[in-house]
Image (tube, rainbow, N blue to C red; front, side, top):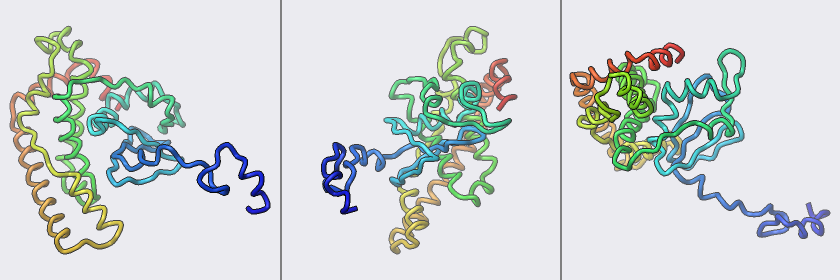
Length: 257
């Protein structure tokens, strides 16, 4: 490159040295927990990264103050249904998740006190979906937390006024969120994921780290199984989900999803 040094030294976008481009002003953004999603997908495929991965030009990422809440919304059947009408189609199934479409998605703003249930559910689903073996072993549990609990909470969030108008709810209120919140217990997903991916990528853990990983694995599974059992047996929760799923708008969305 030395043959062009004179010209390169005069560039307006020069970095620290004549052969550098200017320093990227937002490197630190890549280090933050972020939502990552592919350019092309058959349906919503938003994932969560806490390991500071960099992505190529076929994936995009979103930085948010409440990424786990946003993750639940973006992966819901309701938002997927809406995006099909909004985004660019690729044949009969594929969708292009261009920023110009994703940024138009209607994200409901909620009070700080309502974030926690969504965050806990997101942690459950991230943990359960982390390996193929776990996805098979806990297939029914994943389906329940994802399609029954999380999706129904999103329907309630967006349609509670309509539910009240049509007589399903006495008033536009988060009845299901209140019922579900009584049973939800947090797990330590972040530390488990840190250790798990360190083992996968670097190939080894210290003896203490391996013991901690195994301990977290058992504790997280135990908590999730307890919550799953409690929610399945909760009559109020079942009744509210049945009401939500019976609404005509929800039926249309579920049939399309």
